[in-house]
Image (cartoon, rainbow, N blue to C red; front, side, top):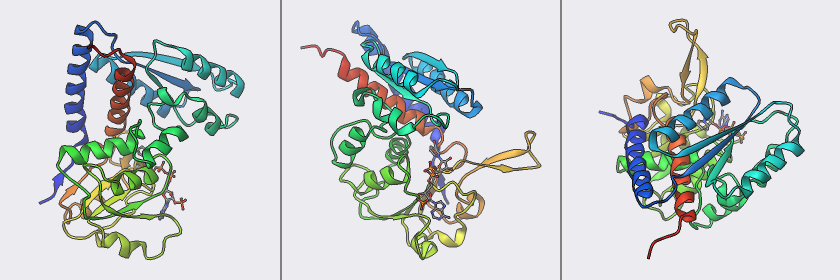
Amino acid sequence: MTQILDGKAVSAAVKAQLAKEVAHMVLMGQAPPHLAAVLVGDNPASKAYVGNKIKFCKEVGYKSTLREFPSTISQEDLLHQIALLNQDKGLDGYIVQLPLPSHIHEDKVVEAVDPEKDVDGFHVVNVGKMVAGLPTFLPATPYGITKIMEHYGISAAGKHVVVLGRSHIVGRPISVLLSQDRPYGNGTVTVCHSRTKNLKELCAAADILVAAIGRPRYVTADMVKEGAVVIDVGINRVEDQFTKSGYALVGDVDFDAVSLKTSYITPVPGGVGPMTIVGLMLNTMLAAKKNRPTRP
Ligand code: NDP
């Protein structure tokens, strides 16, 4: 029978651990970790994501700051605000909630963030360090995936891993992490994208399948090997006449049929979803520890 990889339970376990670490820091006379979020405009999804991050901070005892700007802010002004955050010595890390309005170049903003405060792990310096296997802030969603794997004792070692998707924030970094010599890594990884041929056959040969393409229920049971581990990163809104809102959130995997064949599978929602914030909060703790003096 398949085991559900419960992101909410893993998140609760990490939360308890972080709360303990914060309490210890405070007991030692240190300031708790401080995370700021930059929110531009009033996109409801972005507001909800930022709200969840601030809620998590409160629950574990981090200090949080919300910097809100109108969608009309110029790129120059936003970069100025980023420079101020970089200079703020009382701040351990911050995130700029994406997407940004179309008149702002996201790449320019991401590259303006001080890599030492880039707790989303998006800056090219941190991406480079990750690829080189050096200690750094790992991108939040892939980091969260590795935490689920560790929690359930799943390792990619010696396994054939197939990653669907090659985006900078999910597909590419998780493919790197799972192929590296790390506790959960050492897999043999195939990365698939929209130009991949024989995608079905490749998926059907996977011991671990990570789906991050943003296509509702794309991965069907015939694409999955008996006993495979399936990690579904997708979050897709589909019409659903049986819900009050008229829509439902589904993953990139046809959960009902695929879960009959898997050994482990993440549900949507409640699988990878809660783990992105976990990755962010672990990075923020790492930043805070670097910034606090160590005792002799
Ligand atoms: P992107 O749109 O940036 O990337 C999608 C990738 O999938 C691209 O590499 C694309 O290929 C590939 N792709 C798309 N269609 C196909 C197809 N039919 N066959 C093969 N490959 C395909 O998406 P993201 O990586 O940002 O997100 C992926 C999903 O994960 C989304 O549903 C998103 O909502 C979700 N997500 C969830 C998070 C969480 O916290 N759980 C966090 C981030 C994302 P190509 O490069 O050739 O175009």
